[in-house]
Image (tube, rainbow, N blue to C red; front, top):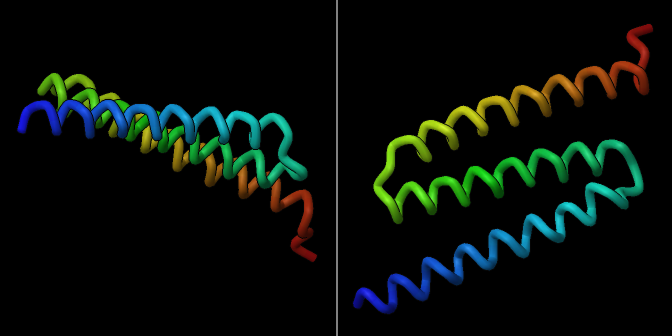
Amino acid sequence: MEAAITILYQASQLMLIAAVVLLLYRFSRGPSVFDRVVAFETIGLGVVGYLLLESNATTARLYTDAALGLALFSVVGTMFLAYFLGRGEFPDE
């Protein structure tokens, strides 16, 4: 049973790393700035997922706190970017 959990844990890590690598490509080559913002947000969520995996594997509370803080800053940062980018594209008049 322990071997199956280890295999699933390593597979989860590999999938998260692969997803972040593909998102880094989207972030660098995105056709629009909005695609880059969404890729940046999703990269942040991928890192949060990785931190939560580490938290579960090591039972360290520090990873959970870091994941919560990163998720909060990632969402707030994306909302600010979307507000300021949208404000330039769509005037209030």
